[in-house]
Image 1 (cartoon, rainbow, N blue to C red):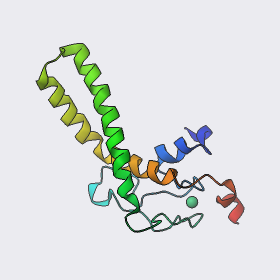
Image 2: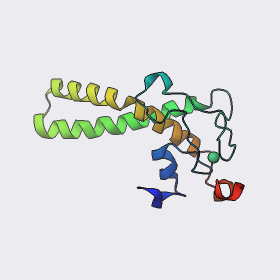
Image 3: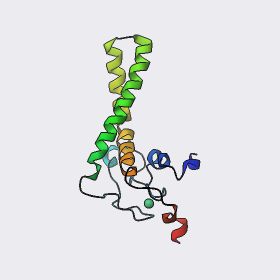
Length: 132
Ligand SMILES: [Zn+2]
């Protein structure tokens, strides 16, 4: 569907693919709402052998990405709720808590994908086609 974006960082981030080959999955289980396996990642990319755990505690930085994403979502929710209810605190709290909690698994994974994409660039030569 969004394969025309392959080669761009947004492809790797949105689909949680390896940032170097855009083929291997960053997470062992694709569905982020299976909370038991939410953070389970292979140690290396199954296609290009990129080390996903670059150093101990590498993904601590992803918390900053998660914070930024949550802030963006909160601002958007604020403007939508403000448009309909004005400065009422209850609708703000209800919508913020509900939507932030509902999007947490996606936010978590996107934040990790964003973080590793800061350090790795796309290299099509490492993809499946040329490794045969
Ligand atoms: Zn890879």
